[in-house]
Length: 291
Image 1 (spheres, rainbow, N blue to C red):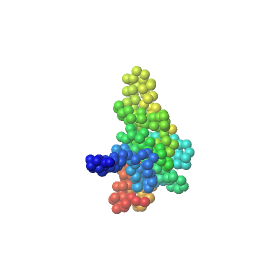
Image 2 (tube, rainbow, N blue to C red; image 1 turned 90 degrees about the vertical axis):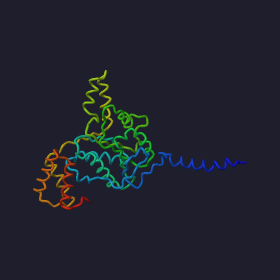
Image 3 (spheres, helix red, strand yellow; image 1 turned 45 degrees about the vertical axis):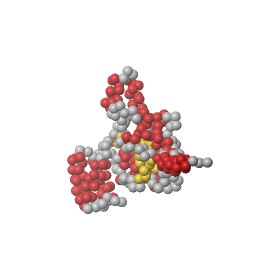
Image 4 (cartoon, one colour; image 1 turned 90 degrees about the horizontal axis):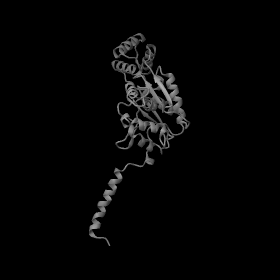
């Protein structure tokens, strides 16, 4: 027989239980990755935010990196087809097209493989690398191949989060899930600044072992793709390709002269600088940059 007090407590307990269920994160097996091809990881909410419009350029517009594009495309396509593939590190000059290539290859593979599960692109921010094991646990049960992408990855000072990345890439007990590939871009080949590596060499009791600990992180990437500053002809080819794609009618001589002056004021020639000039040109001509 229930007492009046217990009758009053029952609704309160039910509301508490419902509130706890709403606060609890969904189990990893319940991760939904439909309705979009790209996602951003938000660890503070333990969820994947879908991105319906990815900021990317067509792979045909990426000039001067044909070898890198072909290599990354083949690796990504094999992975999407369920075949063995390597984690990839794209390293080198700023603005050379590293992150643009990752996004363009993702789109191209999905375009060329209409059958089967579509390849997902999941971005994780550099500062969220310590939560990488949690993200992989959620992706492990998803029936969809996913390229996990970290842009501008590097480590400084006493940052020890690179150790968790090493374990996830190859060395952990569970290892990388079969449906996940890891792509990273960096300005540094070994993901560490040279002075940090040299400092380890000069101050450690066993210098070679300390340096090996730092350098071995990049060795976990089976595929290294280097990007370097482009020459003037390649820079002009980028400009011409963009101008043709977006209908920016300007005499070639004038186009080259303006692009050359633009690159001099920026102190560099790169895909990023070319795109910045094209944005300026389109604005002056009253054109929009839409396919």
